[in-house]
Length: 589
Image (spheres, rainbow, N blue to C red):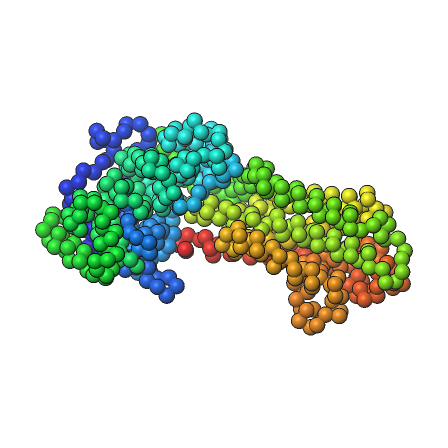
């Protein structure tokens, strides 16, 4: 990589040694990739009223290891994501082998963010097989997937840890595991954001050695770093001053000469104190022009299709279809839930706790004939309805936000949003059905519900299940919209409290103020409460077992509530897909 003037063919000659496949210094084992030349041409980036990058231009040659360096606020991650296609430049362009940027799935680009992009609850081999099933071309059989996974594990020295739970791996091993996910498709270009962040020096050196080995095999590797010690291991380095001004692009020895320092760490202080970011950018633009005049131009990299790789290289082909993705994601979601103890505690513990509390709260025979003012049956109906809502909401709230980093990367690699969301619904709906049936069964056995025919209990079950699925969809929407699990936890009472107030049990809908009546139309708990009340023996005309204030709520068919709840579930599920599409679509931050 050398500093460029803004044209793809204007790469400059340098006196550094390039490692290329076939050179004596290149290891003979492992797949050899046809690396990608990247040209960053006068790229600027605006966001939130700020300019994050200012006309940044440089070039990366195939098979180079390049570090993007700068202090906090210099725009390293913004530049990296722009180069990878995750953020579109506001002006300028990024070219791959002289052509316009392609989507990562087609261009075989790997991107490793700072966050882990693998599920911590699964064994390493299993999570890599799920990732391979989603990323390798359609038609790749189980044997091909297994072979690719095993080769990748050996390539990153993780074979002896393949059966270890990812969360039990060391920090360096988890980082290599995240890199392994990207190497499954044999990328030609790999971007990494702070791959050694939070690692001790020895582990950082191991990760950097992996990147050096990948570059020596022909993969173009670009990564961001704060550590000056890592720069000398790279072929080239790009220094950014504050607010995304290009201060230097060249080899590490050239950087020392340009900044007149012995230690690269001193450059950070110079960029912060000696001059403004604009002055540093102007200085380098002048120096680059002078060097360009005095140097011979490097020949342009030919624009051509990559040659066919060796047999162990994953071939390009059509993507796995949404149906196959849905099946694979459903299996993975179920696998993750079974192996996560906290998730299991929530999924199994909360229904058991709520059912126990309801059995303790209400006395047996509550539906027996009582005085006209007795509210016991109405309260039982309300809390059964609220339990269905609560179960669905809590099951959905942490499903997406907890694995957003994984989803973002898989979405960039071609994952279908529809398949992803429907896989969550497919896995959790049967569990909600079991919980609803158990709740009704326990309350009946304990005589908190009256003896009724199976048709009535089937209708009660359908009511609870449809409400739970609608609440699940609301939980998934909230989980997709929030930024972190802490916000999802805070959203739980905010979403539950209105369902209590506006369901029509504490204050009948007919007695609410006009704004309250309007709000109640959007409450799933209201429609479930009314549907359950229409199915159970609450004789509103004679006032037996309830009060006449609920006569309107419990009159009519339960089908009305079912229709509203089903429509709400569909609408909220579609809204979840839309939010995820907006947040994670390629080319968006």
